[in-house]
Structure formats: C-alpha cells, structure tokens
Figure: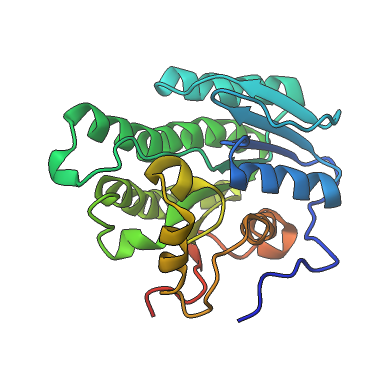
Length: 255
C-alpha cells in the first residue's frame, strides 16, 4: 500500500472560532494546531503539561500547566474562556500510559494515574466546557479514544483501554446532556497512529513498530494530520448532525 500523501487542501472552521486543545504539545495536538492555523482564522488555546506548542502565532494562547485534579481542569477551561472571550470547542488529546509492563505487575498508583489522565480529567474538562457552552448557546467537544478499547487492550495497555472504553460511555452521556443546548459531543477511536505515543510510553523500537504495522490491512500507520483533519471536520458546520459517536480511524485494524 502507498504511504500517506497530504492532500492540497485542509478542512477549516468558520472565522473566529475559539478552540481549546489539551495535549497540544504531543504529536496529535501539534498536528491539529498547525492544521487549524493553516486553514482557519481561529483562536487556539494550546495546553501542554510541560511545554508549549513551539508555534509563534498571535492566534495561539499557550497554556503550560499540569492537570492533576478537577480544580486544574476547571481552571484551564475558565482561563481560556476568559482570555479568548468564550469557548466554542474543546478537543481533549491529553493522555498517557504510566506503566508499560504487564498489568498483573502494575502498582496501584499507576492504575489510578491511568484512570485520572485518560478518563477522569477528560470528564472534568468536558463538564467545565459544557457549563460555558450552555450559557453561550452551543459548542463542540471531541474526546480521544482507542480502537483497542473494543478488544480488551493488550497486556501492557489494559488499564489504558479500560479508561478509553469509559470514554465511549462518556461521549454518549455528554452528547445526550448537551443536545438540548446545541452542544455536540463526539470522539475519535484511533488505531495505530505515528504520533510518537507508542515510542514515548512503551519504548517501542522501529522494528517493533514495523511488526505492529504489518498487522494493519492498509500496511501503514495513520498520520497525525489524518487525525487532525477528522477532528476539524467534527468541529465544523458540516458535522452539525453528528453527536454521541466514536469515529474510527484505524486503517482497517481488527477487521
């Protein structure tokens, strides 16, 4: 199969949209930020726990802070809303795996940390954003999931998959709650994407990545820009009749 070739156009949002991205310093977040800047005249809140997005643009509001609890999540949303004059969209791409060994050997602290980062924090962020969006008359929320959540995960990512399976329930419940106020909530259910996630949290080598990619029917990993394009579509006016859905982007994995 051929490698990913970037199209000569990018999806875009209506001018003036205010988008908060958590996890903006990661591979997916950086791709999304750059694509928004490329095609949309919008205001972007780029949240990173340890570093900002290395993009110098007046449309980017850098927000460098860690998310440890509900108060932190509320604070990030409230600060962005204050600085941007409101919030039209929230994209939660923050997430990580704290223990890369077999789940049978996983310490309780790492289990709790996985649940916090990958399920609890997205809930608190989304809830805080919905409060602002209800008052403003609508908005969009996109959460990050994984296809492995439907298959029990692996021995090294079992807790992560459990948290992301909870994300699927979260998307549906938030969408049902938000619909009367025109708040649309969806998720992206990702397969193997070359965003640096597997290398960062599992110390995957190129040989191990190649072996994993060989299992994908399209025989390649997804590109972060493909994820970015899907997210922007879900934030755009063309997705106004989509809510409560997890959209897969997997290259046919697990068929």
